[in-house]
Length: 347
Image 1 (cartoon, rainbow, N blue to C red):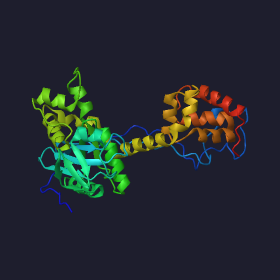
Image 2 (cartoon, rainbow, N blue to C red):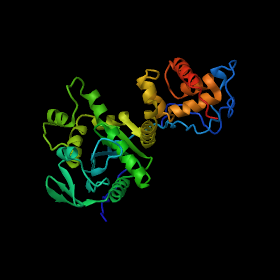
Image 3 (cartoon, helix red, strand yellow):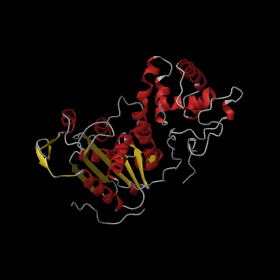
Image 4 (cartoon, rainbow, N blue to C red):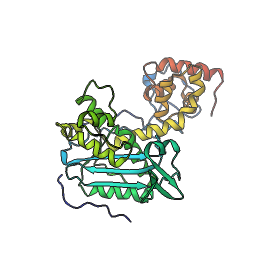
């Protein structure tokens, strides 16, 4: 086992915005019954989504406001991975507690069992015969579950409120939370995530690009080995500590709950967006509508079931609720024409 708990101590809401309204499928939709079609006298405003079988609830967006973090709460972190999706494996975790200078660097055996050549060309990490190499030199590596636990314990040693900062943080945050969920390890809700990319776009406006290497070269006058997580955290820390950048990070923070919400939306999109392919191709549904509907947790098959039980008015209510956009009535009419022509009957 690795012993990575640092020594020393450290010290350690406002009202959030209203969460997006989601209907509870177990308690709403009184006007819709199994096998009953809609009545033309019933308007969309009179229908509540109440009991449609097999219609998943949409993800509940968290209204929690991020904690007001101080400089002692800031930990810069970075992940190197086998790819760009949330199913990719983590192969390196690095972190730096800015105020104390305590540093963590973990190499991780890819859970998928390999590192694609495209990723190796960027990170210099290769995995052969159960051994991880960095620039052709063997490095000590641990299993993903062990690395994630070690990282969690390292973070916990700094107190209850921690602000994890990364450049384009949502990529790292989503992957990190997804991997903790995959391993069944609880992610402390007191952790926040802050995006230095958004911060620097405000602090240093008008630049041609905001890549970390370019920022560090131009602002701190330093060149470093990009795509080595350990080098990246030191480089990012060097410009975060300039001016009053650390004090502004809370303005660009999000919560663990918000990251989980985004993950659920992305998982829903993977599950359901493909069901809209022919409708998008026929220009009945726009790509944006298909994305919003799938992220909310419904497929075209779900809409067919709604239609078979409550007709046009019920389908309009669902489309409006699930964020189909201001043209939801037009979309409902287009689907009505298709479904009625095909004599949809799922009862």
